[in-house]
Length: 363
Figure 1 (cartoon, rainbow, N blue to C red):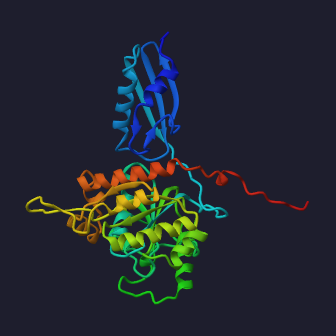
Figure 2 (cartoon, one colour; figure 1 turned 90 degrees about the vertical axis):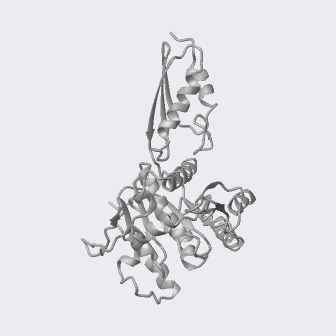
């Protein structure tokens, strides 16, 4: 019998603060079982977010903390992931085949929101999740080009659409249904109806995270999303520039008013590194995203460089995370993906989908 207790092992694990969860594994309720036999301990960890790129580091940190205890010489850490649906706005039903919807917003155009959205979707997939992406920009759909998909969606039953696959993620966009250079000359009600149909009439299949690439602004589409679409959380993309931050604040306040939780802020085009001399320059200013996160008490989940590689690769239909999965920039996107999904995993879970519908019959 070992003299080391479960409580001592839990106390040792609590010394490690996970960078994704930003708290220890015990507080995050990720420790599911601890078995002690002689000088050996076995620890079962259940994560609520995909973390393939982080599991080895997490296991090593837990081992380091626990083997520091007198009487424990060998530690086995078993890590599993189970992604659950999380709560959304009150009174809105979940969408069939989708566990969580994450809206990507900017408030302003030209800050790289769509590029961030597609790379985030691919990063979540690389970490082990099943992912879909909905291009909600009806007037300016860009995801078909970014994913390199030119096919038209099929409708086996004449009512619903099969999502198109791009680099392993399910996708839907108005851009799949029209020619690339055809303008959408529609008024607001038609746009919002199109968004609802694209979302609800697509046969999403076992999607852990559906990324919704919103158009810039705080108008009809954003309002429809907040009132009719079950959104688990939102991510705001900005640049350090004051004018971009002004609109990013409007996006945050819009989500706050409609009861959609903001999971974090991403600062895009944060720094430019000269490809010839390596000189670093903050072209659009410095520290704006961090200042906004502190002002509103939102997580600052990462900053991305101004790099022509990111632009070239989405233009060619192979975003950076797919083109160079082991590269430095893909690593930043994957880190952001882990932090956003970890933040979401700490929210209350949604159980309504597990309950059957009650039908009253007159016999």
